[in-house]
Amino acid sequence: MIEIFARLFGRRQASKAIAKERLRLVLIHDRAGIPPELLNVIKNEIITVISKHVKVEREGIEMNLSHSEGQTRLVADIPIVSFRPSPGAERRRKMVR
Image (cartoon, rainbow, N blue to C red; front, side, top):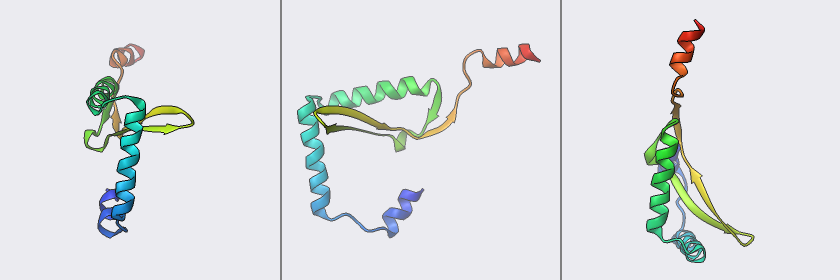
């Protein structure tokens, strides 16, 4: 929600800044040797596993590669909407009563 207001009323990035960020991301992908298709497969598998335990907002998910100090990192920003009860939690709750 805040992003909408920021986009409507916030300052827009200059074309130069956007191009620089895109180039940075391309270079990171090249250095890591991970093609974008593989990154999408990894993203979908991570979402599938996490979705077993929590409900996530798929539209807000962002995954990127970052490179610093000679290391490549997969950085995931996954909005969690709610937690799912663990299997057997309802059964345990009934047993306690």
